[in-house]
Image (cartoon, rainbow, N blue to C red; front, side, top):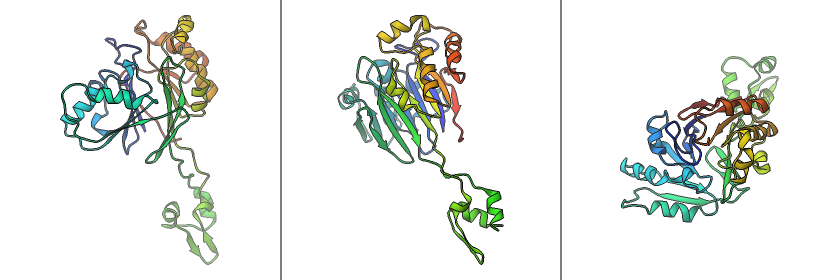
Length: 300
């Protein structure tokens, strides 16, 4: 599981930062979280490929979060894509994405299906689940939690040895086979630990402080939370449905997440170290994401 931050700017792109977009590589497929303007060009500069994108999850329909969609889809067509594309978003998704798909003269050459989601929705997909929560923003907006299915427990080698397991029987037990021997059967559950939760990524999109987002992020492996402003502009940020870096860190601390990445930075901040420092006072595992940052999410 790998994150690639394609764009970390808030409201509009800058020389240093592109508009909001994050690629999440689940190995089987690539998921795109938001698709701000310039996303397709950012793909070319990254380790990810836009042709592998199987699903796009849009948090809301302010331009810096979805205006890259027409160009991305048209580029997919020009590169002879045939694989279906599923796009998910808030309740107004069908109307808004429909408008984007009608822009300009081009022929859509592969199936695109739009799914409108409400807060507290759950989508079961191939090997992972996506859940939503309402974000605090002036327009309909969602936060997303992408979570792998639970993993098998760890193999207890010492326990297996005490039960007389040897040679190729270790691999057979790990594969789910029961070993029969004169002293009795040894079943996989006899030598496997409890199931482990899958890795999870929570993305707030644009949001002021939100109890719903905090609950969605409960014990997530990674939280990606907007940090539009520093603490001195916190009140103004909240009035516009945004959070400060400190408030993002409070969400991370309350939710007990493994790591926090800050994103969606106002253009007024040329340097991100001050925002990162404010967050780390509250939650030590805070990092200000930069465009094209790759982060490998390892299995606990």
